Amino acid sequence: MAIAQINVAVVGCGVISDIYLQSLQDKFAVTNVVACSDLNPEKMQAKAEKYHIKAMSYADILADPTIQLIVNLTTPKAHYSIIKQALEHGKHVFSEKMIAVELADGQELCELARSKNLRLGVAPDTFLGGGIQTARYMVDHGLIGDPLSVVVSLNRNFRVYADIFPHMNQRGGTLPFDTGCYYLTALASILGPAKSVSAFGRRYQPERVGQRTDKPWFGEKSTVEADNILTATVAYQDGVLATVHFNSENILNEQPQMTLFGSDGILKMGDPNNFDSPNYLTKQLNEPVKFPFTYGFLENSRGLGVADMAWAIQQNRPHRASMEMAYHVFELIHGMYQSAETETVYHMQSTFDRPQPLPTGYLDNGFWGPTEESALAF
Image 1 (spheres, rainbow, N blue to C red):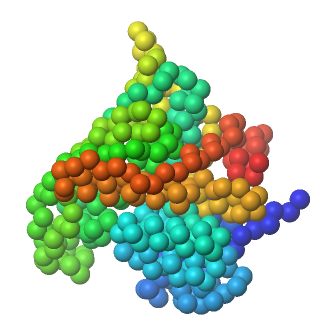
Image 2 (cartoon, rainbow, N blue to C red; image 1 turned 45 degrees about the horizontal axis):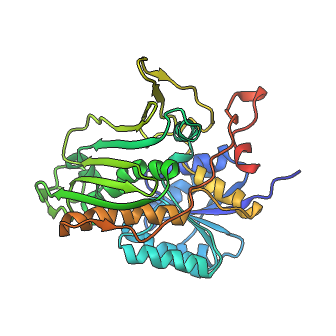
Image 3 (cartoon, helix red, strand yellow; image 1 turned 60 degrees about the vertical axis):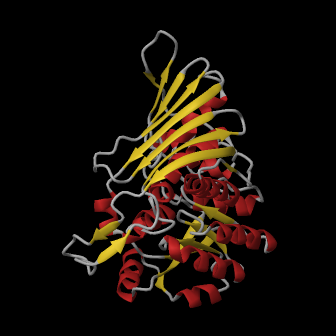
């Protein structure tokens, strides 16, 4: 039978837009990208010509009744306004991380989506990739016994990154929000909701000067708006305890770590910012073994959450990159900052239902295998 497509418009034509547009056009049959928009008209027109879609103002996209779903790829400070306008105009929304900057704004957007019976999904969607889905399979099938504790660590150099993308040193854009959310979302999809968090933070070299001669802010002073080194202990509702370390003031050589310790084994996961994160299983008195992938979407598949939402709309089922899970991770990061500031334990107020895993076996094996997208359709 013919696949009923969902008409999609992409708002924000920055660096990340290319992989979204490529995936939504070439990888998924359910999405039909019809338009793009950006405050920079030259950038918008270039993307429209490259992908053979319409260049439209955001107002025109909102007014177009044929556009059903908006993919929001703007910077964090614009997310609240962009998402709210879309929901008020009856559009489903999938947004790049995170849902907003302020916690109350994120809660308001979730309530608005519910009141209008609209879908709101939020990145990261990398947890739907073959790497994290395989890790969840291993945990769900008892390969490490009862999960007991987790160690998470991420280092980056925002003296470089944030000099290219200044929002990374602004409130709502620091390392826990920008990249740490990949780790916390992966854990949420595997372990479920968190119960409480206790954290410590430090703001290292808060006064910065633009170093890049190719940027208009070269030589200009700016201030880091939130702690850029954060450590935390998270207690999950299922009893698992996590040690979390985020440091954006280190070096460019990243050493990502996400290791889950169970009663009968150790699961060492790869970088959850990627779709093809490898998984290594260690059993007692044995060497680590690389576990085979049991799922597809091993290449860069950003937009996978959009496609899952499009299929979910047609099937009247929950989409997996849900606003409830996204808001919970959003609250968890805010809770870390609040705990560090007040020197108290933060108790989580939100919860969510763990998303259904993808069905196994839908690997991209070319002509002789089922299509990856079939995993979303059944």
